[in-house]
Length: 194
Ligand SMILES: NC(=O)c1ccc[n+]([C@@H]2O[C@H](COP(=O)([O-])OP(=O)(O)OC[C@H]3O[C@@H](n4cnc5c(N)ncnc54)[C@H](OP(=O)(O)O)[C@@H]3O)[C@@H](O)[C@H]2O)c1
Image (tube, rainbow, N blue to C red; front, top):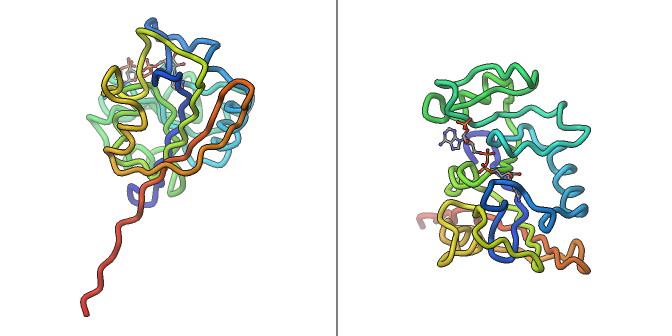
């Protein structure tokens, strides 16, 4: 949590942990209808969607959602002329709480939907990360889920190092080898003085 905001991440990755190809485009091999349906339904319940310029979720309900678009093009927080429900946000110039207050989001879930740097920025903060894996897809030379993911570190390693634990995996499209696993942060245990 950051204040009254729960932080949840959403991504679909290839078997080798990539979210896009080397040119920054998301290939069809990791596009999946069951995953899209899950994502769109979850985003309908989020208080705000947060992403970089190329990671907009699309779909007919997207314009209704409040969003922060992470960018270095503004100093702190500024209106987004092309999206009335969105603000442009530079984390170097304003905290998340300041940006959300300007967007009039008082509490609830902040859904983080990418890309790589934005996913990485929230790694220490996720309360949950919904990781879909397309086991039959490989994207050599692709763009990783988190900045540190590559030859020596998987998305699972990165989440575990940051204190998240995996739940049971669910086959959301078994024929396509697509599995969804939600990773969650254990709440800190409280010790009582006797
Ligand atoms: N498979 C998946 O689940 C998934 C999820 C998300 C995205 N994708 C795909 O991945 C590709 C795009 O990924 P991308 O990494 O290039 O994402 P992106 O959404 O374009 O995010 C990168 C942008 O975020 C801004 N940014 C990043 N770090 C920042 C920081 N510290 N401070 C301020 N602004 C910052 C910059 O915007 P400015 O240039 O405006 O300053 C940067 O260009 C697309 O093809 C997308 O479809 C896939």
